[in-house]
Image (cartoon, each protein chain N blue to C red):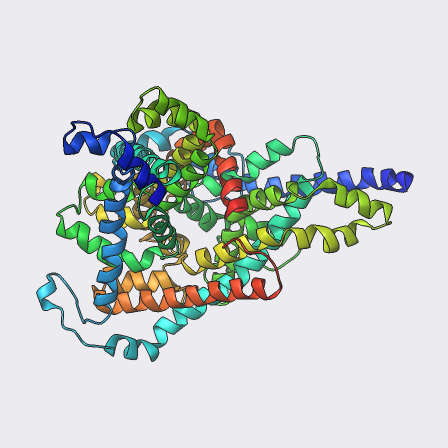
Amino acid sequence: MQQQAALGLRRPVLKMNLWQRFWSRSNERVGYLFILPSFLHLLAFVFIPLVFSFYLSFTDWHGPNLQSANFIGLDNYDFLMGDRRFWNAMGNSAKYTLMAVPLGMAISLLIALVMNQRLRGVYIFRTLFFMPVISSWVAVSVIWITLLDPNVGIVNYVLSQLGLPGVNWLGDTATALPSLVLITIWKGAGFQMVIWLAGLQAIPQELYEAAAIDGANRWQNFWRITLPLLRPTTFFLAVTGVIGSFQVFSPVYVITRGGPLDSTDVAVYRIYLRAFQEFDMGYAASQAWVLFAVIFVLTVLQVWYTRRRGEETLF
Amino acid sequence: MVRARSRFEVPAKIVGYTVLILVTAMMVVPFLWMVTTSLKPSGAVFSYPPQIFPETLDFSNYTRLFTLVPFGRYFVNTIIVTFFTVLGQLIVCSMAAYGFARLNFMGRDIIFIMYLATMMIPFQITLIPLFLIVFGLGWVNTYQGLIIPGISSTFGIFLLRQAFLGVPRDYHDAAKVDGANEFTIFTRIFLPLVGPALATLGVFAFMGTWTDLLWPLLIARDQSLRTLELGLAYFNASTTAFRQTNWPLVMAAAVVVMLPVLIVYIFAQRYFIAGIALSGVKG
């Protein structure tokens, strides 16, 4: 930086007005102009809302104008600690995450391993597996509501053909959340598979050739070479998966509306109801911050765990 | 060893294809179900056992759909919102990315790290105040309320910055020697060179905007401003309210919502998958 400034001083001073100097090719302050639109956007729609949200979480604001907001200190957070409906929703989010993330990652890895075997027509399969990923959540939800219909749905029909009893998938408190997990995995498997595949293709083939000389079988190859070398991918999918699962909203909104008996009421759906149905904006803001704190702690724990094992992380 | 391996090959391939075909069936049957159900007579109670292929094809659901609910209007709304959001993201993100990748100015890296940090902030935190700001600006129930908050994305800036960093520095220097200013260098030299990355961002922005539910749910209060995704959610909710869902009609609506996305995907899947792989590998 100092060198550049020194060089700039030696340059002959041309007769230019401020604007021309600002735009002149040697002045890289023009960079500020390049980032200005995005900066204003970030300021207006991320930074200011962030500060605003933090302030709101200490008020009892119910709208519509800000004059009616009273600063109530930590009352929201105090009430939140004993709010059983909120913790039920957080618990459901946690259950959903615990089921969807590992299961989804395992299934998509399995598909990716098969696809990595240089079979013919892999690209056609990849295209088809990806269709759920790009589909809208609402359309997918509507389809699955009919497929999982307890009386006339295809899924129960297939079960009955196999001699198994039907399940009231979305209507039973025990199966509603796992059903949402299944739909999520179905929708997300193609996405995760593409990322696994990219990771798999980055593993040098020589390692497998060397292992073959040592007499390693497929099983050993997988556990000793493939999985350890996929750690960065595993880490990425686990971190983004946990973050994404804790933020699930659309399938809950369209399919179950939190029911039956709050068994699929997840954190973001609860915040949405509190803020935009009950207009309890201040309290909902405090719920959002608690959700963020939980996600943040989980992310830090994952980074810490990976670091502790001596692995290079992506962050 | 070699012989033992080749004896393994054939069964492994059979297992592989079996898995792929089974998974394909699971992935594709729901879509097939959606399309064929939409071609069943309107209001038909489901037959049991479920029929994937109807005996007669009935396209009247599609015409009924557009008379019953203003799906044509929803379609136009979605196109307007998506077009301007994608255009905005391409312009705003590419400018910022170029600034961060190729121009030296005070505090550049600190500002960039600040941008990256915002990627960790969940949408829900900013959702309520974001809505209040848009409300305060009088943008609820307007196109700008649907569009402006989405015209920049940190992910997009990050993606394009990586692409700009891949362009050799010499291009920049050569153009400067020729007397081009930064804006000319940016539009004439750098933008054409990162075409694939722009396409990737464009496809991502398109998919994200076209299928977004939560934001339109908050902003588009009037029916005349609803997007397809929101319209489908409301349509589904209104038909199920009386426990007499007209599934063929709802499925026809789902097809209408999904078709444009599928078409774009089929033509642009190269960029889409490249973008996902990139975001996965590079974090």
